[in-house]
Length: 266
Length: 74
Image (cartoon, rainbow over all chains, first blue to last red; front, side, top):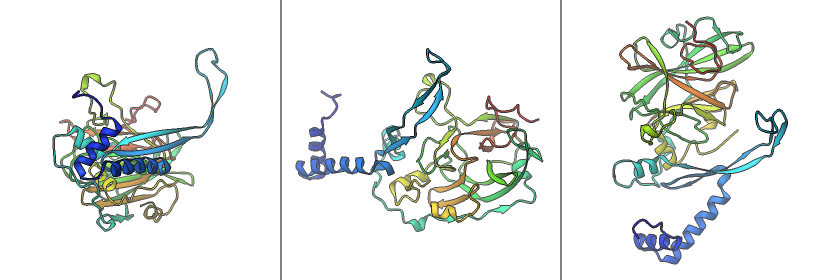
């Protein structure tokens, strides 16, 4: 029965064998883990080495049916609670990647190893970021005029060469398919002024000095064979009003360690 | 981390740079808030990436190829 899924009792027995604990102790531990996961699902519950279990609520809304017998009618979609599970980066590396030693899942990364900075320099000459991209003065999507300023942040260091964009407060995702030479790259944020309102309009990472000849949507790394893909998914959803760019490896520290981004805060 | 981010004032446009032994992460307020945002690589004539741009759907700019957007500016 080589391909049979282990039953919960078999799981407990195997874990007891591997750890030297009594089967009853392992059962108690797994039961407690499940209970703790249900109780903490609103904040996301990390099962070490596996992933994050999360309860999400979607408020009710009204929508107009676009097709079918109720076409044109407004219907009410009731509020809904769902459960989501996101596989951790460590699980992906271990279960999909080449065989490697089991990492320490409980390694505490001291907060001191993370350095925070909100420094930025307003650029008098933002052409390093804006040339070929945004005309000056810029125009908003709705056609209204907009003034933009560009702030240069500290360089983004990408030692693994795997770069990722995501909502940092709801968790990771997949890095971009295109990898970069490991290094440290200048990052500019374009702030659009629309009347009294100021918004982050574009995040621009300058990877080389070369002029841009063409643009391509940034596809995400996929584990599926190319033949099975139905158009690589691009982009990421933001539920927290916050986006990010990062070295994909930083998630191993955040998920495995003291989690500076562990809270969801609206 | 959120507390740190709050320190960068002006509610609608904040940022935070985080450095770690595994590289950095930069967080920023996203456009008008929640949504689905696309990124684009700008390639040089040899096909190597020269820019990586995340578009928060506010400005018209050249790389945008989303169907609902205005034609690229030339």
